[in-house]
Length: 555
Image: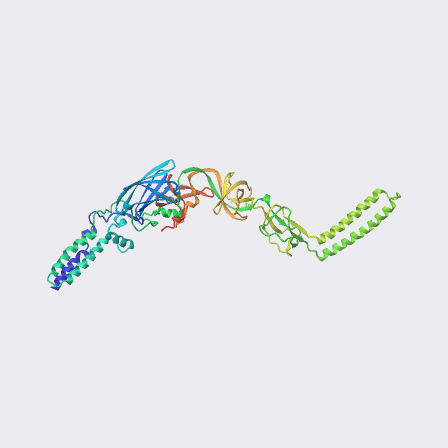
């Protein structure tokens, strides 16, 4: 008898062990379909757009939050008035000051499809935006079973399509246990009932109606919360709240004609008319002026004494100087005596007035020469600033021996700087040029080009116009110079370009309110802040111009 009961129990579990036609293919369910629906990790939501505005409404905890942005730039609109037509009448959404508007929606607790109309007023302009929010059973948690099922799905314990299978297996174990504990003759009947009921539970677990895998790819929302991630089709889902945090901004692509731009390597140089070197004419020992040597960055004026150089005297030079001093002293003594005699004889007319004056001049000349010889022996050479500016280079030390023509200081006017670029081809007259230093763009004015090659390149010089703060002499930069040739493309900021893992240039397109797609593009240099897209993006697309690098890090 026990073997017969065991056989009936095994028969009851056969539907779970053998694949049936309902398991492989059931009504409304085609496993041969290639397209799948994409479940977004987001709350129930709806979106709409007009010619100037874009709206996203998110239902959460009996409240609807509306995100209102400008369509072209994705900037939040915080000065609008939003009036929404709901199933319970007209409701005015209260602004939060950051481009979001909220209003109570208790009817979202019930599952269903709700069509809403929002009227957005900005001054004298008004836009009407219609959108639909679909509240699913899982999102509304209408029943305890639905709540626990959603919780299990969210935790990853079961899948939404396999929850019926789990319930059927649990029911089979319960009924099997009941059949095993029956000790009367009715236990055979209980096992028979289990054998009859369980196949129907299994069929209900595997076969369900209303699911069509041939349906086109759709975006569905779950109740797990708003999470930015890459979708199955390769696009990126970014909730509006996350877009506000990342400060995503867009620009509508509009092609135009621009002059062809060439990139030239260059470096910052001082203006030749506003800079100079402080050098020694003769070698000697350096000594500081009164107040010490000027420090780096000290502002000086033309003619300021920056240092002194005392030429060293060799033994032979000292001997020659002493010999010369003796000769001068002897000549001065002879001429002085002659002048004294002439002064005595001049009143009587024995010596003419001209002879007396010539002797006086000769004595004065010899005296000056003797004084200059003494002065040259004890006074050093003063090194003065040739122009107004700051001390850009130079660290002299007291007692240091300077060689002839050695540069002691480099004086530069920081407000007058040039750029010297190198071109490896002959370029026509360059009208407009710019340079990029980090995030700063410098406007340049053409000042001339060299005629002789310098290491197979032609030097081209530009004057930096405007503010030059943050720029230093010798800094390497890239110069963007316009040529007369023209080209057509879409101009976007350089921050819009993102490098892929393969090293290709790409941009992100704002496809819909909360979806972005990456496109490979071909770019050309335009200026210090922009590049030109020649291929890869069609006109009229919304291109991300701020926050593209942050989008590229979403996984």
